[in-house]
Length: 313
Image 1 (spheres, helix red, strand yellow):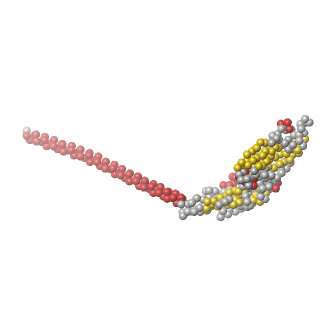
Image 2 (cartoon, helix red, strand yellow; image 1 turned 30 degrees about the vertical axis):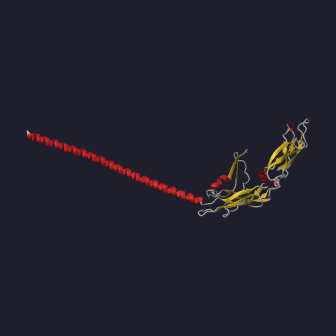
Image 3 (cartoon, helix red, strand yellow; image 1 turned 90 degrees about the vertical axis):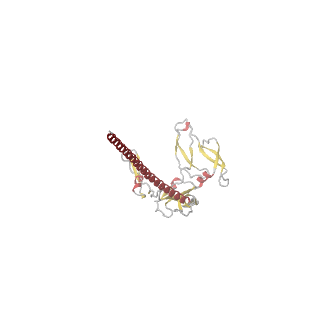
């Protein structure tokens, strides 16, 4: 009996040892997994730190580049120098200083106002009351008084002529149009004298002459030469213009002038330059085509070298 109890006791001890060993194996497996996860987390954290360090270096590089740009002083521009005479198109030169500046000077197109255009910008006027319409010439006057500007260069008072509104009863009068006169610089107007052709009815009273007054808004018109080669110093192309006498130019228009344009755009691509338009060809299938020669800019400018307009055959 005692021997049987002893055998049972030994069996229970062995079963307990086996169970304890199994529990110990499970714990070691869990701790191994936790250790592996911690290793992965540490590796991921290390990669994130390296990424943050790289971004910080890049930001630092950008800051240094911006600091270098700040080392360049502001652009200082000289006065606009007309290509010819005292006004018109020209160029101005800009310069700046700085230890790390790659570009220290550049040119830019500009324009100096001529004659009455310059006055319009510098002189401001108040408009007085319109005078009664003079039916003999079809116009009336209005007095302008200086409001803002230098009295030494701006007229204190000037008179301009405006066309009267047409009388409904005289719309049947027919006139032969005359030629436009030269532009009167002080008033910035020009006059045309028309002659009566015939009376529409005996009841209508038509003046034998009609005076038309108009602003000199057409400006100075020139016949232009072809664009020249690009000047690599100023990076501009130029062409010469001769005043068109047929247009009765204003008195303040120079007889000759020079026009300049930049050769390249902001991206450094050569701009399109063209020759004059050829005469329009005959109307074909409801379209009239005209062309001009591409002087600079290459094939990408070909589309702008052709113009198509609708017409009646």
